[in-house]
Structure formats: structure tokens, C-alpha cells
Image (cartoon, rainbow, N blue to C red; front, side, top):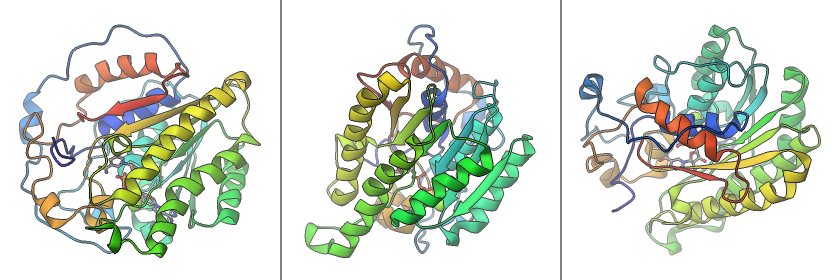
Length: 324
Ligand code: NAD
Ligand code: MG
């Protein structure tokens, strides 16, 4: 099965896992059955989608079809009431889905994004505020260590503290061979995907106490890399490894560290250099449902149950999400 075989249109499964990872650890029920197909699922967009290309970092608002981040479907239940979260890459894709979900679960949310993503960020801020939660927007480039430190400080100051850090932002640019990956490319990918989570985690820990949570976005690429994104894939493995080590290191402080490892999702990352036109053309086509599964409420509940029970485990803190 290739990495495009299980493309997922929406980010709901990943956000559900992200909420589960951030929520207080509560043992839940059994594994549950696979998500059932609903009548509404028949209306979900099906591939082939129009091949499209945006300049990096891309905007969700300009994608066709537009990704579904749970804007109209996610229902919260107060599981993050009173928490204060910082989410990098919170303007779009998996980060936006997490931001919406966290706000609906009762958290105040700060998002970071690149200045070029301001239109997407504004939509997210409005969605968070619509829930009556505080929204803080802090644009800036995570490849800069000083900015990373400032980001954590500003987020914590404006939220009144910091309980949850979601290291979600990443750079993925497809390159046919290693010869096509310049040192600048490699540096940009490492700085965004590996250094920034390191810097942000270090800064956040100065402000976090018992009960705090760090959630890192990894990928199925960590264990099953595609041939044309090798620099990106190695960063997802690094993040997973970092997660496991930090989970052990921070257990004694009462701070949990988890990683969400999504399969493919339809996000700006894919149309701004992250996937070739050939991959875009067949995006999702050979997924089990022949479409992009979506997080209808009933689809998500088994996932919540499964993932929440896993969220308290420190010895295997990666939550794989590859079925949407
Ligand atoms: P996305 O494009 O919506 O989000 C990535 C975000 O990273 C951007 O919105 C941008 O704000 C941020 N970013 C990139 N470079 C930055 C920089 N230098 N400074 C500040 N912010 C920067 O795409 P997404 O797919 O939602 O990606 C989010 C996470 O999901 C990433 O960690 C990615 O590795 C992971 N992931 C995605 C997929 C997928 O198929 N889309 C699969 C597995 C894992
Ligand atoms: Mg974005």
C-alpha cells in the first residue's frame, strides 16, 4: 500500500486523537468497531480531485475541495475545560482541526502560523471566539529560535498560563531524489520540523506544571517513508523518538507527552509542494471507502474511546491515525 492509498480528506480522526492525547487520562471502554459508513458519507467529495498548486505554505481557503476541519461537525464535551493551549500550524489542516476541537472542549487557544497564512488564521480565530473561548494569534517563523521562545512567552502571558503545547507545524516538499534536496531545503525542513519542537518544548517546560501535556504531530511516514520526501519523513521519525524519550523524562513531573501519527490528509501541505500532481490526482482513491472518510460524530466516538485509554500510557505514546 503506497502513501497515497489511504489519503484522508478530513482531519477529524487526527483531531480526535489530538484531543484524546491532550485530555486528562481516563481509562475508557473497549477497542470498539471500525467506523460505520453513514448516509452523509455518500455526499463527501470523492477523487479524482482537480490537481492544484499553491505557493508554499498554501491556504486552506483556496483549496478545491476545501478541507473539512470539523467546522460544522465537531461537538465538544468539556474535556479541556479551562485549559490553555498553544498550537503551531493552527491556521490550517490538522492544527486547525485541533484548534476548533480544543475550543469546543473548553480550552483557550493560541495559534502560531506564518504571516502569509493570515487569512486562514483569521477564520480559526473567529471559530475559537464563536465558542466563547479566548483566541490568541501569533504569526512568526519557527525556524528562528528567538521567535520560538517569544512565541511561548507571549502565548502563556496572553492565555494566563500554558497547559498544552501542540508541536504540529511542519514543512514537507517533495523532491524526486536526494540530489534534488539542497542543503537549504534540508536545513529548512530540520529547523521547522525538529529544531522548533525542541526549542518550543524547552521553553514551554519552564512554564508547565503537573497535569500539563505536550502533543507532537508525527506521521505514518516515521515508520514507512515515501521515496520522494525522505528529509521530511526522517523528521517525523525524529519527532516520534523525541516524544518517547520526553515522555519518560517528564513522567516524574506529571507531564504527559504523546504523538499523533496521521496517515495522509487533504491539507494545504499537500498542494503547496508536499505532493506531486500525480499523487494529488489519486488522492484517497484506493482508501478502504474509495473516498475520504469524515468525522461524523458516530465515526469519532469509538476513536475517542480507543485513544483516550492510550493517552495515559507513557511507554508507547504514539497514536496512529491512518483511517480518517
Ligand atoms: P498544513 O499545511 O495545514 O499545516 C502545516 C503548518 O505548518 C502550516 O499551516 C504552517 O502554519 C506551519 N509552518 C510550516 N513552516 C513553518 C514555519 N517555518 N514557521 C511557522 N509555521 C510553519 O498541513 P498539515 O497536513 O495539517 O500538517 C500538520 C502536521 O501534520 C505536520 O506536522 C505534518 O507532518 C503532519 N502530517 C500531515 C499529513 C498529511 O497528509 N497532511 C500526514 C501525516 C502527518
Ligand atoms: Mg497553513
